[in-house]
Length: 273
Image (cartoon, rainbow, N blue to C red; front, side, top):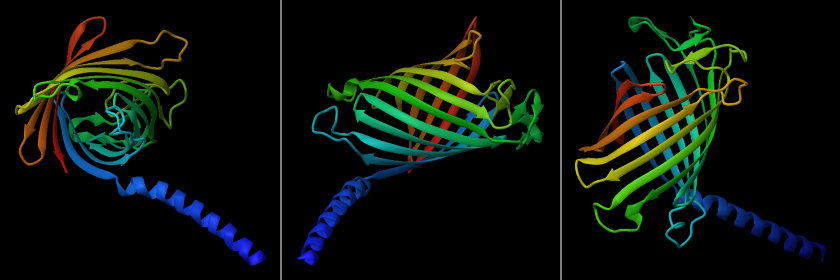
């Protein structure tokens, strides 16, 4: 009798274990993956290579238009420039088609590049080549909409996206009052920062398959006692579809603060696989 009871108990444990295993493995079996290598340059001048690999796992799917493609994306990226190297991992959940929730983090370090007189890590105005690590953690939420999901036709896709992010950036060798710079991105202090990104674009069945207007809003050290300065960057995006899984994106940008000034033109050549 005791043996029979034990077998019944063990069977229940095995059934529970099998159900948990199925729930865990099934989404992974249905997962898809994609990769890309991107060469980024600008007229500053600057150059960077980014290698990305993304895994998309179906999750919280339903039968409606808002839930049929719900998923979790795990995005990994390695970026290398002449003055720095950064590793980034993001998790992006799409609970409904018009929303994304994301968590992510980055770590990297920088060094001097003597041929161009560039310094990838600066602490209090002095080079700190390979002296410590740059770290960033972020949480974000986006609302997005594509009119092509409602109206059929190759010319019906107007895309809109609004993204809000809170991030924490720090340099391991800096105190709370030290000023540092990583990868030529401007002076920073350890602390929390805000980023907003707003995009309105139009997708077309042409070689230039997407054009958009993008406004970026930055507020550094938002919890400081002094009033943080807000920065705005306005960009025009044009994407060109090229043969052999290549695409080229051109983004001229201007700074909008006390006055409007030219910032840079960014070019990104991307190979997808």
